[in-house]
Length: 161
Image (tube, rainbow, N blue to C red; front, side, top):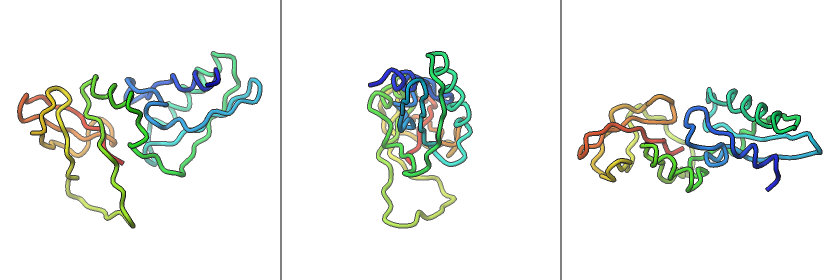
């Protein structure tokens, strides 16, 4: 692993700071040409408001490390929650968030539904499977709000995408 990659990989997600961009799976590539570095990242979903902050944080940290940094955005292939590393999934659980399960693999177009998405979600605090959706959207669009029927604690679930 190059020094520039190590710096870029250590930058944290602005919305879920327990995750590095590498653990979130949005860090796609780091190319070095002397002191010039080009970093490629992929948004978790189109229109993700955290992308500008991710870009700025990458440029700032790499500049501090002595590089002239540029950040490119890659939209293809689209990010999947399957790209979150096991270390990242554990960090989510350690911070009281429910990690996503396997992403759906549709064979064709994805139907639009206005009904809540059925998910098998366990409580990150007590591991109970007796959970109930309270809101399809949490503090960010990529999280849903749940409540545990056993320990009665509310928690956020990172959605499968």
